[in-house]
Amino acid sequence: MRKFTSKTLLIATHNSGKLEEIADLLGDFGITVVGAAELDLPEPHETGTSFVENARIKAHAAAKATGLPALSDDSGIEIDGLDGAPGVYTADWAETPSGRDFVLAMTRAHDELVARGAPKPWTARFCCTFVLAWPDGHDEVFEGRMEGQIVWPMRGGHGHGYDPIFQPKGFAQTFGEMDRWQKNRISHRADAFRKLIAVFEHD
Image 1 (cartoon, rainbow, N blue to C red):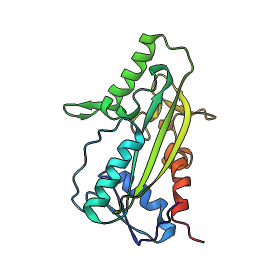
Image 2: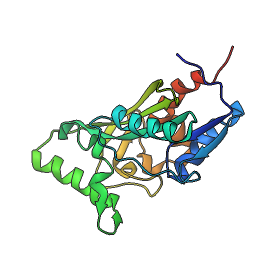
Image 3: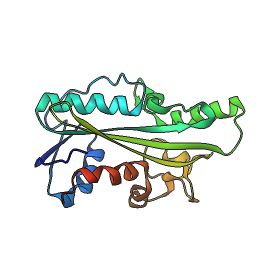
Image 4: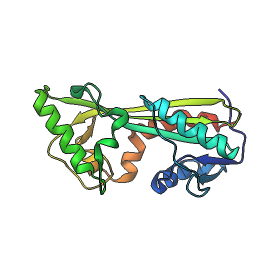
């Protein structure tokens, strides 16, 4: 595994919440974090058919454009009763002409499970893939998962995306009912991040 030795890391996201979360997680390593929006980078088209493909597209585009090592992530939810959908199309299911509507996306997931007669429990998992890319084309991949099930009706007003219908394994609450810090400790992103930090730790 290649170690990270730079002082600055580019986070290939235009999402300020995600940038803040990653900057916070990297606080102990003395690394300066900069976001893609700050450098006015365009968002590349995510044409991959897997989380790792899309994360690679974003990380390599950012590293190539700036000459900085770049970290990107791609994440989503896989529902077994829907053959793994929405998967890489997790955000696409929420797209409407007036912006993203995740209540619409969650309702679609529920309605399709019912229409298919999928047996309960409706097992599912959140997946997160981090890709750290260097300007020379090298990259390292770190994958995280959180197993659980889809519940209905929606529960909780915290979090974002599909959180109100996802109940993580071993917990009585949905992600939507958990406070941000509790969710961040057990989430798919936390699982991937625990693997990623090995890159920043030096003997």
